Image 1 (cartoon, one colour):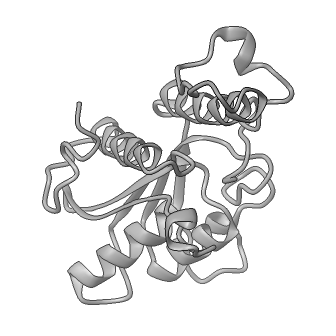
Image 2 (tube, one colour):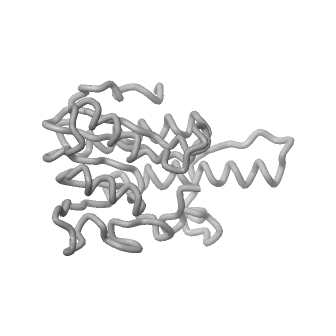
Length: 195
C-alpha cells in the first residue's frame, strides 16, 4: 500500500478507527522518509482537514512533529487558529509542545495509540489537555491501534540499531516479535521517544 493512500484533504473520517488508520498511514510516510514513524491527522465534521508526519530530520526543525504539522495545515484549511470540534488523531502520545498546540487550537479530542513515557504530555509525564488550570480542556482517548503503532516504532529503532551494528548490511524495519516489544533497550518498549 502506498504511504499516502487515504491522506487526501477532505477524506472521510466516519469514526475513530478510520482516523487512526489515516494517522498510521501518515506514520508510514514518515518511515518512508527515514523519520521516526509518527503520524497525525486532524478531522473536523468527519473530514480530514490536516495531516502530518514527523519531519524533524528532513526539515532540520525540532518543531517538525507530526501533530504540529497536522495542526498547522488544519488551521490553514479552516482559515483560523482555533479548531473547535476537531479531533487530533496521533500514533504516539503528544509531547508538551504538541499537547500545548492542540490546547491553543482548542481541539475537542485527542486520540492516540501508544504512550510515550519519556516525553508524553497526555497522561505520562503530565496531562496538558486536561489540566484544571487551563481555560480549555480536551478529551483524551488512548490505545486505539496501539500494537500497529508500536510495531512501526520498534521496527524503525531496531533497523537503526542493526545499521549501527552492521553498517555493511541493509537494515530491515520489520515488525518486532513479542520478546522485542518488552526489550528494555527498545526506545518504545514502554512507549518511548521521538528520536
